Length: 145
Image 1 (cartoon, helix red, strand yellow):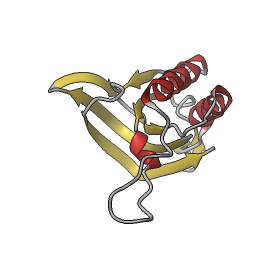
Image 2 (cartoon, one colour; image 1 turned 135 degrees about the horizontal axis):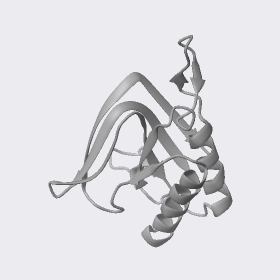
Image 3 (cartoon, helix red, strand yellow; image 1 turned 180 degrees about the vertical axis):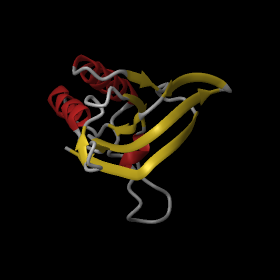
Image 4 (spheres, rainbow, N blue to C red; image 1 turned 30 degrees about the vertical axis):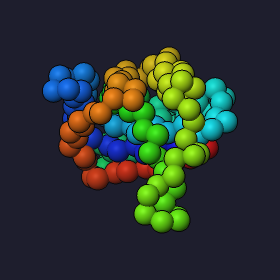
């Protein structure tokens, strides 16, 4: 599993011109599932996302998590995180999990994040999404387990 988390002031997600999800201050998380990934890895990703200290405290240091700041997560499935372009210019996605299993782990991870006290808004699995986000910092964290 891999995620890219970006700290934002706000973000919106549209599908076919319709607003599907939006958040205020929080994280936009692009989430990829690799062949063979498990629920145990999903739980570790959920804990990492809820606890990741990338928000400033009163002293201006990154000491607070999205949970500490009552922020939200816009959680977007993105199989292209497992695109391998080391050979040629067209990425290979052979490491990405098949859609049915990837969707199960995507939803499972979102549920685990919510159980840890962080509101989660979802994208639409497999859809062509339009995401607008206002990055803060910018702060971008890449995590793979």
